[in-house]
Amino acid sequence: MSGTAPPAPEHPRPLRVAVAGASGRMGRMLIEAIVASPDLRLTGALDIAGPSVGQRATAFLGDVPGPTITDDIRAGLQSADTLIDFTRPAGTLAHLGVCRELGVKAVIGTTGFDEAEKAQIAEFARDVAIVMAPNMSVGVNVVLKLLAMAAKALGDGYDVEVIEAHHRHKIDAPSGTALKMGEVVAAALGRDLKECAVYARDGYSAPDRGERARSTIGFSSIRGGDIVGDHTVLFAGDGERIEITHKSSSRATYAQGSLRAVRFLAGRANGLFGMDDVLGIAAAEVSA
Image (cartoon, rainbow, N blue to C red; front, top):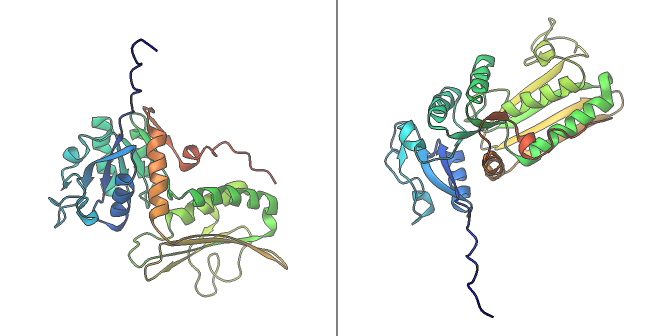
């Protein structure tokens, strides 16, 4: 054979990722997952001022090269395509402001936002692409679809309770995932969660105490030990009950879901997306 050999195919550039809260439990899990992914590269690591600032973000993995942890948001995002943020609402909003300036996409796993803060995030998404979800676990997002199906099929004849358990360090309650589960069930039943949610029961006086109102959706929160995250939605009827449960034994599920979200955002300039978009189940029909 003769002639010139065709050029070798070009390999796409790895997606450049920055991690906020780099020295925390979730931050380290994300960093480890990114380092293990050949199509991703860790280029930035953010944290609040403290002893971790100035340290190599990958030091806990041994002799693995990586960026230095910084509390300078702009410096931490300068070389990134996408930020993954599992911090706190105020910090996430500050990070998103710089993301918009620099054109950096964002994957947000932070919970505890109020309605005004969610509106701010939607405004940021007019300029940069954002995936935001109260839980990045693939399993949890499949469970959300199952809950909608169950609620539609069971209708108003069942009492609904959401029970969640997390580690002692979690600062918000109920968890963002529990609230999302409640929203999904309420929507399937034609209710507004703001109107029907009950977050505490004590004593005998209505409306949040005493005999249970059929139209309410109750929430119970447990905090203790190192529980990663357990969620159960209980549909209790006369003579039977249905429980749909998801239990996380490792934060690795959140990390892997986050990396799927990073890949989903590649090539998207703007817009606000959820994990159902990432998983391709947003438009899935739910029927009784």
